[in-house]
Amino acid sequence: MKCCVGGGLMVVGVPLRHAPVRRGVDAQAAEQEGQSKGRFVFSLLGPGADIAPVVALAREVHGESRFGYIPFSPSKVEAIIARIVANPSRSACILATRSDEVAGMLWCSLGEYHIGTDVLLTTIHNLNVQKSLRASLAGGKVTLGLLKRAEAWSRAKGAREMLFHVTSGVETERTERMMWKLGYDVMGGNYAYRQCR
Image (tube, rainbow, N blue to C red; front, side):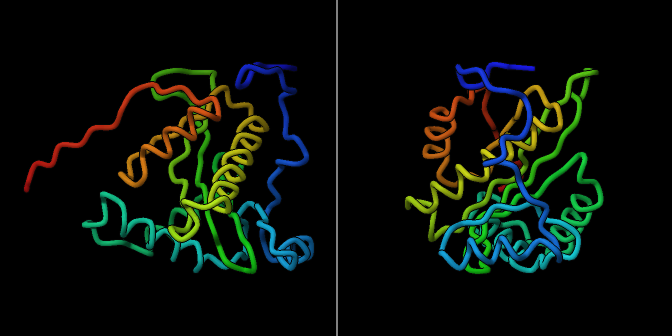
């Protein structure tokens, strides 16, 4: 089966070079080899994985976002991770690590359009990259690697589209340029009205 993505034809499925690996207690050997060479390793968060670095990155990114005034809840992040790990057919947390450090993460889920049937869509809820990496080539590699693996995961699940809602208020112009270059279409905007100031 073929479909058109970004102007070119590609076979629907997970290309081996972008296939995420389930990260858990047993998936460490290949990961250690890549990290020992200083490369980023991309993997799916799985059962038994250490989630403390993921929670720490979520805390860092939350603090600089437009929602930073809202108290951060580690327990809510842990609950989201538990739901992701418990239902890998419908959600994924993809990690980018280097030297045992989480450099970035992407959380996405699969579902039907809220008032439609028979078509699956993937929604990217969070794409977070360490602030110290963002404006660098390494940050671009992390972001691109996370997105490509999310696209592969989405194709493997049979999703027709992947949606990315940017609401952090952090580097939105850079994000918009990158998403446009990657072939994503702009389909609207995000608006906020603060009731109490």
